[in-house]
Length: 219
Image (cartoon, rainbow, N blue to C red; front, side):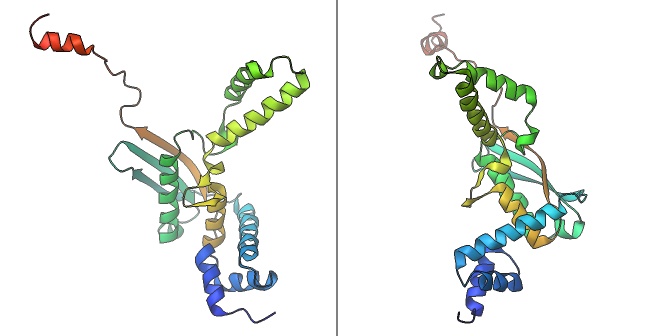
């Protein structure tokens, strides 16, 4: 095949954030196919992340995102291994993107599916097993259907399984692993908290007719 041009290498680097030499190698390994090269780099990123997962990540950032209008706010803590990486713009952008992701996903309650309490899953299973659309089905079929629904529900609740809002082709987990490959450190989303204006407050609903009558001095 023809020599890989610097322009194509740069394009792949802009798409993935990987180093120039890695991009050139990815293109050569995949005969210049851009999409296959992107997938190849993602796989390498995942492998790189797996090697670093056991390393202590106690540095990082706590950042916030306030949605337009000030009705939704998010605090998120993302950890890395060194203060040097925590100060890098790429890491700061990652943390901000994750905070925005939490704000955009009101159903998300946990970082990973493993964080979901077993008692909650058992409760969800009991609800699903009792649904009318499963009535009359054999026990083994019901169990299989319910487990499929539970797995789907788990992914709906977990931040890392969400499609990334800026690139629906990858999940938040893949986004983090790409950052691990780029920055060379273990990176972990530790926790987050979402604040919704007025959430949990019981708003008093007054009868409009009674309110008008009261203002008019009739009551």
